[in-house]
Length: 328
Image (cartoon, rainbow, N blue to C red; front, side, top):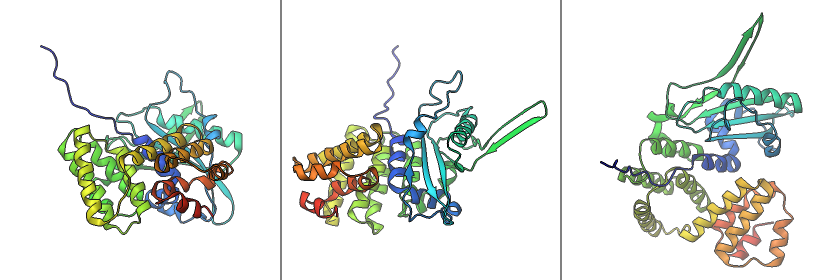
Protein backbone atom coordinates (compact mmCIF):
# COMPACT_ATOMS: atom_id res chain seq x y z
CA UNK A 1 0.00 0.00 0.00
CA UNK A 2 1.44 3.40 -0.97
CA UNK A 3 2.15 5.80 1.86
CA UNK A 4 -0.31 8.63 2.39
CA UNK A 5 1.02 11.99 1.28
CA UNK A 6 1.34 14.52 4.05
CA UNK A 7 0.25 18.05 3.25
CA UNK A 8 3.06 20.46 3.95
CA UNK A 9 2.51 23.52 1.77
CA UNK A 10 5.07 26.28 1.19
CA UNK A 11 8.08 26.51 3.52
CA UNK A 12 8.23 29.28 6.09
CA UNK A 13 11.13 31.66 5.48
CA UNK A 14 12.24 32.52 9.01
CA UNK A 15 15.83 33.43 8.14
CA UNK A 16 14.79 36.03 5.55
CA UNK A 17 12.29 37.57 7.98
CA UNK A 18 14.92 37.94 10.70
CA UNK A 19 17.48 39.40 8.28
CA UNK A 20 15.00 41.99 7.01
CA UNK A 21 13.93 42.88 10.55
CA UNK A 22 17.52 43.28 11.77
CA UNK A 23 18.48 45.49 8.84
CA UNK A 24 15.37 47.65 9.22
CA UNK A 25 14.86 47.79 12.98
CA UNK A 26 18.14 47.01 14.74
CA UNK A 27 17.55 49.36 17.73
CA UNK A 28 14.18 47.70 18.33
CA UNK A 29 15.92 44.30 18.40
CA UNK A 30 18.12 45.42 21.29
CA UNK A 31 15.19 47.15 22.98
CA UNK A 32 13.16 43.94 22.94
CA UNK A 33 15.76 41.21 23.58
CA UNK A 34 18.62 42.99 25.36
CA UNK A 35 17.13 46.16 26.95
CA UNK A 36 19.99 46.78 29.43
CA UNK A 37 22.53 46.75 26.62
CA UNK A 38 20.28 48.94 24.45
CA UNK A 39 20.32 51.72 27.05
CA UNK A 40 24.13 51.92 26.83
CA UNK A 41 24.27 52.30 23.03
CA UNK A 42 24.32 55.67 21.28
CA UNK A 43 21.62 55.14 18.65
CA UNK A 44 22.21 58.62 17.20
CA UNK A 45 25.13 57.00 15.37
CA UNK A 46 23.90 54.83 12.52
CA UNK A 47 24.84 51.15 12.80
CA UNK A 48 27.48 50.02 10.29
CA UNK A 49 26.80 46.54 8.98
CA UNK A 50 29.98 44.53 8.36
CA UNK A 51 28.66 41.93 5.94
CA UNK A 52 31.89 41.70 3.91
CA UNK A 53 34.01 41.20 7.00
CA UNK A 54 31.68 38.50 8.28
CA UNK A 55 31.67 36.57 5.01
CA UNK A 56 35.46 36.26 5.11
CA UNK A 57 35.43 35.00 8.70
CA UNK A 58 33.02 32.05 8.55
CA UNK A 59 34.75 29.21 10.45
CA UNK A 60 35.11 25.84 8.72
CA UNK A 61 33.84 23.24 11.15
CA UNK A 62 35.64 19.95 10.54
CA UNK A 63 33.15 17.31 9.45
CA UNK A 64 30.29 19.83 9.43
CA UNK A 65 28.89 21.02 6.13
CA UNK A 66 28.01 24.70 6.36
CA UNK A 67 27.47 24.63 10.12
CA UNK A 68 23.70 24.21 9.77
CA UNK A 69 21.29 25.37 7.09
CA UNK A 70 18.95 27.81 8.78
CA UNK A 71 20.75 30.51 10.71
CA UNK A 72 21.27 34.24 10.64
CA UNK A 73 24.64 35.78 11.42
CA UNK A 74 25.10 39.54 11.38
CA UNK A 75 28.13 41.64 12.33
CA UNK A 76 27.51 45.31 13.07
CA UNK A 77 29.51 48.22 14.45
CA UNK A 78 27.81 50.28 17.17
CA UNK A 79 28.90 53.03 19.53
CA UNK A 80 28.69 53.30 23.30
CA UNK A 81 27.21 56.45 24.76
CA UNK A 82 30.68 57.17 26.11
CA UNK A 83 31.97 57.49 22.55
CA UNK A 84 33.96 54.31 21.89
CA UNK A 85 32.86 51.97 19.10
CA UNK A 86 32.46 48.21 19.42
CA UNK A 87 31.26 45.35 17.27
CA UNK A 88 28.34 43.02 17.87
CA UNK A 89 27.96 39.55 16.40
CA UNK A 90 24.25 38.73 16.35
CA UNK A 91 23.48 35.06 15.80
CA UNK A 92 19.94 33.74 15.39
CA UNK A 93 19.47 29.99 15.18
CA UNK A 94 16.20 29.02 13.51
CA UNK A 95 16.77 25.35 12.89
CA UNK A 96 14.29 22.82 14.26
CA UNK A 97 17.09 20.52 15.43
CA UNK A 98 19.95 20.98 17.85
CA UNK A 99 23.38 22.00 16.54
CA UNK A 100 25.90 20.43 18.88
CA UNK A 101 28.82 22.58 17.70
CA UNK A 102 27.07 25.98 17.88
CA UNK A 103 29.00 27.30 20.91
CA UNK A 104 32.32 26.20 19.43
CA UNK A 105 31.46 27.87 16.12
CA UNK A 106 30.64 31.16 17.86
CA UNK A 107 33.89 30.97 19.84
CA UNK A 108 35.85 30.65 16.57
CA UNK A 109 33.99 33.65 15.14
CA UNK A 110 34.68 35.67 18.28
CA UNK A 111 38.39 34.83 18.33
CA UNK A 112 38.89 35.54 14.61
CA UNK A 113 37.19 38.93 14.75
CA UNK A 114 39.28 40.05 17.72
CA UNK A 115 42.48 38.71 16.15
CA UNK A 116 41.99 40.35 12.75
CA UNK A 117 40.29 43.62 13.71
CA UNK A 118 41.24 44.15 17.37
CA UNK A 119 37.73 45.41 18.14
CA UNK A 120 35.80 44.95 21.38
CA UNK A 121 33.18 42.35 20.52
CA UNK A 122 29.86 41.24 21.99
CA UNK A 123 28.23 37.98 20.83
CA UNK A 124 24.45 37.73 21.25
CA UNK A 125 22.36 34.63 20.50
CA UNK A 126 18.65 34.14 19.85
CA UNK A 127 17.39 30.55 19.65
CA UNK A 128 14.18 30.23 17.64
CA UNK A 129 13.99 26.44 17.55
CA UNK A 130 11.28 24.33 19.22
CA UNK A 131 13.39 22.54 21.84
CA UNK A 132 12.89 24.42 25.11
CA UNK A 133 15.71 22.50 26.80
CA UNK A 134 18.46 23.31 24.28
CA UNK A 135 20.26 26.41 25.59
CA UNK A 136 23.95 26.47 24.65
CA UNK A 137 25.49 29.52 26.32
CA UNK A 138 29.21 28.75 26.52
CA UNK A 139 32.17 26.90 25.05
CA UNK A 140 34.90 25.55 27.32
CA UNK A 141 37.99 23.39 27.01
CA UNK A 142 40.69 22.08 29.36
CA UNK A 143 44.00 20.39 28.69
CA UNK A 144 47.21 19.89 30.67
CA UNK A 145 46.59 22.68 33.14
CA UNK A 146 45.18 25.05 30.53
CA UNK A 147 41.53 26.07 30.58
CA UNK A 148 39.30 28.40 28.59
CA UNK A 149 35.63 29.36 28.82
CA UNK A 150 33.68 31.57 26.41
CA UNK A 151 30.18 32.57 27.54
CA UNK A 152 27.48 34.59 25.74
CA UNK A 153 23.92 35.83 26.45
CA UNK A 154 21.13 33.66 25.05
CA UNK A 155 17.44 34.38 24.49
CA UNK A 156 15.04 31.49 23.88
CA UNK A 157 11.80 32.20 22.00
CA UNK A 158 9.96 29.32 23.67
CA UNK A 159 10.16 31.34 26.90
CA UNK A 160 7.65 33.78 25.37
CA UNK A 161 4.88 31.20 24.87
CA UNK A 162 2.89 32.46 27.85
CA UNK A 163 3.13 36.07 26.64
CA UNK A 164 1.54 35.75 23.18
CA UNK A 165 -1.37 38.10 23.95
CA UNK A 166 1.11 40.73 25.13
CA UNK A 167 3.35 40.27 22.09
CA UNK A 168 0.44 40.66 19.67
CA UNK A 169 -0.39 44.06 21.16
CA UNK A 170 3.16 45.39 21.01
CA UNK A 171 4.34 47.96 18.45
CA UNK A 172 7.84 46.45 18.47
CA UNK A 173 8.33 44.47 15.21
CA UNK A 174 10.38 41.83 17.05
CA UNK A 175 7.50 41.15 19.42
CA UNK A 176 5.35 40.50 16.35
CA UNK A 177 8.08 38.36 14.79
CA UNK A 178 8.37 36.25 17.94
CA UNK A 179 4.59 35.81 18.05
CA UNK A 180 4.49 34.81 14.37
CA UNK A 181 7.35 32.35 14.87
CA UNK A 182 5.64 30.70 17.83
CA UNK A 183 2.35 30.49 15.94
CA UNK A 184 4.16 28.94 12.96
CA UNK A 185 5.72 26.27 15.19
CA UNK A 186 2.32 24.88 16.22
CA UNK A 187 0.44 25.15 12.91
CA UNK A 188 0.80 24.08 9.28
CA UNK A 189 0.39 26.02 5.99
CA UNK A 190 -2.74 24.08 4.98
CA UNK A 191 -4.50 24.38 8.34
CA UNK A 192 -7.44 26.61 9.18
CA UNK A 193 -5.76 27.18 12.53
CA UNK A 194 -2.76 28.92 10.94
CA UNK A 195 -4.98 31.03 8.69
CA UNK A 196 -6.92 32.23 11.74
CA UNK A 197 -3.75 32.89 13.75
CA UNK A 198 -2.22 34.81 10.85
CA UNK A 199 -5.33 36.93 10.35
CA UNK A 200 -5.47 37.70 14.07
CA UNK A 201 -1.90 38.99 13.93
CA UNK A 202 -2.47 40.94 10.71
CA UNK A 203 -5.78 42.50 11.72
CA UNK A 204 -4.39 43.43 15.12
CA UNK A 205 -1.89 45.76 13.46
CA UNK A 206 -4.72 48.18 12.65
CA UNK A 207 -5.47 48.60 16.34
CA UNK A 208 -1.93 49.58 17.36
CA UNK A 209 -1.85 53.11 15.95
CA UNK A 210 0.75 52.19 13.31
CA UNK A 211 1.11 54.22 10.12
CA UNK A 212 0.62 52.71 6.66
CA UNK A 213 4.31 52.09 6.11
CA UNK A 214 4.70 50.25 9.42
CA UNK A 215 1.67 48.07 8.74
CA UNK A 216 3.09 47.11 5.33
CA UNK A 217 6.50 46.29 6.82
CA UNK A 218 5.11 44.31 9.74
CA UNK A 219 2.72 42.38 7.50
CA UNK A 220 5.68 41.37 5.36
CA UNK A 221 7.39 39.80 8.38
CA UNK A 222 4.26 37.78 9.12
CA UNK A 223 4.06 36.71 5.46
CA UNK A 224 7.62 35.35 5.59
CA UNK A 225 7.12 33.37 8.77
CA UNK A 226 3.54 32.12 8.37
CA UNK A 227 3.23 30.81 4.83
CA UNK A 228 -0.18 29.46 3.80
CA UNK A 229 -1.22 26.96 1.16
CA UNK A 230 -2.74 28.54 -1.97
CA UNK A 231 -6.41 28.03 -0.92
CA UNK A 232 -5.75 29.31 2.62
CA UNK A 233 -3.81 32.30 1.28
CA UNK A 234 -6.73 33.24 -1.00
CA UNK A 235 -9.11 33.13 1.97
CA UNK A 236 -6.68 35.19 4.03
CA UNK A 237 -6.34 37.84 1.32
CA UNK A 238 -10.13 38.10 0.94
CA UNK A 239 -10.39 38.80 4.67
CA UNK A 240 -7.60 41.36 4.43
CA UNK A 241 -9.29 43.16 1.53
CA UNK A 242 -12.51 43.37 3.52
CA UNK A 243 -10.57 44.67 6.51
CA UNK A 244 -8.71 47.27 4.44
CA UNK A 245 -12.04 48.50 3.08
CA UNK A 246 -13.50 48.77 6.58
CA UNK A 247 -10.44 50.64 7.82
CA UNK A 248 -10.28 52.79 4.66
CA UNK A 249 -6.58 52.02 4.31
CA UNK A 250 -5.45 50.48 1.03
CA UNK A 251 -2.17 48.65 1.48
CA UNK A 252 -0.56 46.80 -1.41
CA UNK A 253 -1.88 44.82 -4.35
CA UNK A 254 -0.60 41.27 -4.84
CA UNK A 255 1.70 42.48 -7.63
CA UNK A 256 3.16 45.16 -5.37
CA UNK A 257 3.63 42.68 -2.53
CA UNK A 258 5.52 40.30 -4.81
CA UNK A 259 7.70 43.19 -6.02
CA UNK A 260 8.45 44.23 -2.45
CA UNK A 261 9.51 40.68 -1.54
CA UNK A 262 11.64 40.40 -4.66
CA UNK A 263 13.27 43.71 -3.80
CA UNK A 264 14.14 42.50 -0.33
CA UNK A 265 15.56 39.25 -1.71
CA UNK A 266 17.79 41.23 -4.08
CA UNK A 267 19.08 43.18 -1.11
CA UNK A 268 19.83 40.08 0.93
CA UNK A 269 21.50 38.11 -1.86
CA UNK A 270 23.65 40.67 -3.67
CA UNK A 271 25.21 42.66 -0.86
CA UNK A 272 23.69 45.66 0.87
CA UNK A 273 24.37 48.58 -1.44
CA UNK A 274 24.06 46.85 -4.82
CA UNK A 275 21.11 44.77 -3.64
CA UNK A 276 19.22 47.71 -2.16
CA UNK A 277 19.55 49.69 -5.41
CA UNK A 278 18.34 46.75 -7.49
CA UNK A 279 15.53 45.93 -5.08
CA UNK A 280 14.38 49.54 -4.97
CA UNK A 281 14.16 49.69 -8.75
CA UNK A 282 12.21 46.42 -8.86
CA UNK A 283 9.56 47.83 -6.54
CA UNK A 284 9.33 51.20 -8.32
CA UNK A 285 9.02 49.56 -11.74
CA UNK A 286 6.33 47.17 -10.51
CA UNK A 287 4.29 50.00 -9.02
CA UNK A 288 4.85 52.85 -11.49
CA UNK A 289 6.02 51.03 -14.68
CA UNK A 290 8.93 53.35 -15.52
CA UNK A 291 11.59 55.25 -13.58
CA UNK A 292 12.64 58.67 -14.91
CA UNK A 293 16.30 58.79 -15.93
CA UNK A 294 17.17 61.59 -13.50
CA UNK A 295 15.58 59.72 -10.59
CA UNK A 296 17.45 56.53 -11.52
CA UNK A 297 20.76 58.40 -11.61
CA UNK A 298 20.01 59.92 -8.22
CA UNK A 299 19.30 56.49 -6.74
CA UNK A 300 22.57 55.15 -8.19
CA UNK A 301 24.47 57.90 -6.39
CA UNK A 302 23.15 57.01 -2.92
CA UNK A 303 25.04 55.04 -0.30
CA UNK A 304 23.77 51.88 1.38
CA UNK A 305 22.77 53.83 4.50
CA UNK A 306 20.85 56.39 2.42
CA UNK A 307 19.08 53.60 0.52
CA UNK A 308 18.00 51.69 3.64
CA UNK A 309 14.70 53.55 4.36
CA UNK A 310 13.72 53.94 0.70
CA UNK A 311 12.38 50.42 0.01
CA UNK A 312 9.37 50.75 2.34
CA UNK A 313 8.86 54.29 1.05
CA UNK A 314 8.77 52.95 -2.53
CA UNK A 315 6.15 50.41 -1.45
CA UNK A 316 3.86 52.93 0.23
CA UNK A 317 4.19 56.19 -1.75
CA UNK A 318 1.04 56.96 -3.74
CA UNK A 319 3.01 58.22 -6.75
CA UNK A 320 6.52 58.64 -8.14
CA UNK A 321 6.23 62.35 -7.44
CA UNK A 322 5.55 61.68 -3.77
CA UNK A 323 8.48 59.26 -3.62
CA UNK A 324 10.86 61.75 -5.26
CA UNK A 325 9.67 64.65 -3.09
CA UNK A 326 10.58 62.75 0.06
CA UNK A 327 14.12 61.93 -1.03
CA UNK A 328 15.35 65.28 0.25
